[in-house]
Length: 344
Image (cartoon, rainbow, N blue to C red; front, side, top):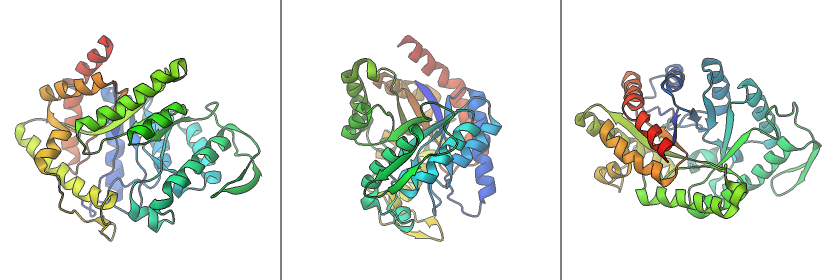
């Protein structure tokens, strides 16, 4: 099981400033490479202080200049918010400028608040995404593409320049429900998924759907992979565990507001709302603990068959504490996971 660090750009104190926010993300990426992570993941969200990264492709290009070999994964580029005729060219340019290290994770969008305000209502997002994905793949793999669909109609065009990575830059699809994971796997896509704050039974069902679909595909599915995002934070003490669980509970109070809730936002600041899930239930579903316990808990994730674990650990803590936690994970947990993977 490989590891990946999520540059989630959580921004609870909007007075902190965008410059400091993105400098922190760059420093975390450089640290992740030094500590042996396979890559970093970059979200796309607009207008709000949760997962705030309006252009993951721009960030990927910047990180390519600051690192040597990290895989740079969008998680995810929200296709319904883009015109594929423009976006395809931006993907090609980013692939070239990152020297082929870009992995394009794509999805339909998650937050009704931003989707509505950007002209792509969440109610239409699945249909928009499905057609946009087909258009994007055609533009990246073919020349002189024309289209006559529900959302796209255009005469023959060729995206220039043509992709450096052939037949096209690496692509992953984000999907959460197990039947959707199975369907996308059978189409030949690598998968990004997450159980969010859900119980372990959910992530096991998500992984099983991918593995079962691969088994049905035989050799055609052998090299497909699945990445799973989970809140993982290696603490120094029981007191820090309690603090970070509370921070995670506060974070999900904001996340739920724009994911499933009413979308109460003022001046870009997402309101933190009360949660039905107790803090004890949340703690049981996340991986916020000290190194010894974390090794045991993540061994279950490795055994389930996750190819790469995306560590989501930006919970509003100071940057210095976050970097120390990354060091603890790399020294106290990562070597054990690598041995587990080698034995498997």
